Length: 234
Image 1: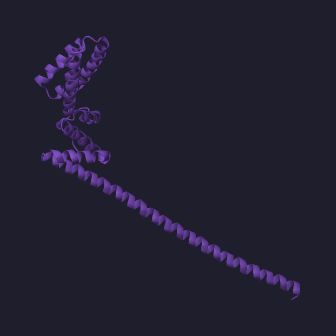
Image 2 (image 1 turned 90 degrees about the vertical axis):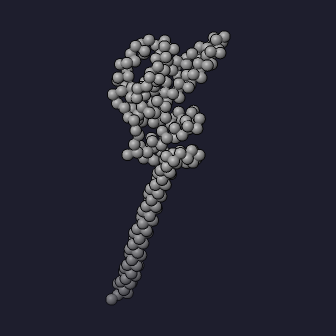
Image 3 (image 1 turned 45 degrees about the horizontal axis):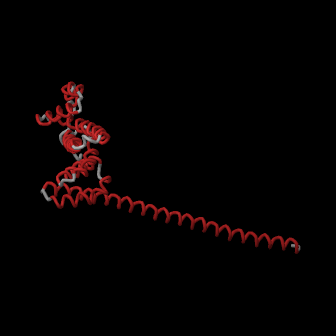
């Protein structure tokens, strides 16, 4: 073999060995990357599992607090009811929908019973918006708005000399009356009461709404077609 061929052969051998070692390294890197990928996916799935578990545990904890709140209400523990209710409020959105609506009604009743009627109003409104045929909440709302009517009426009686203020109060009075009527009529349609009926008729007369008064009977019949008297968690 000539020296030229010998050099070529040695170069080939050296290059072949180099590429063989390089290929082996690449294979190791690929395997290493695959292993890293598997480890990453394992860690990621573990974190996801922990997050789901934590969320589930948190939801269970919130629902348990809701049950404690209901138990305190049932047992008449007013101070405990207030504490449990206000602690649960920030997380009420994590309750199942029906339980959440039931809780909003209960929290509204809690505030009403504690003479915090302005706080009760928005929670009652939430319930009425989701369950419009639940006449119990309409009765509560009707009488809360009736208190506003009486409050404005008192101001009207002492503002006769101020024409601008009197006009503003009259508008506010009419709006409050209409709000009270919308709720009182639903309550009356589903659970008739002579007292509530008399209040409704008086309010129509006070705002001089003859049409509303004359169509009251037919309106009550229509409103009475669908009535819900109990909220369920299920």
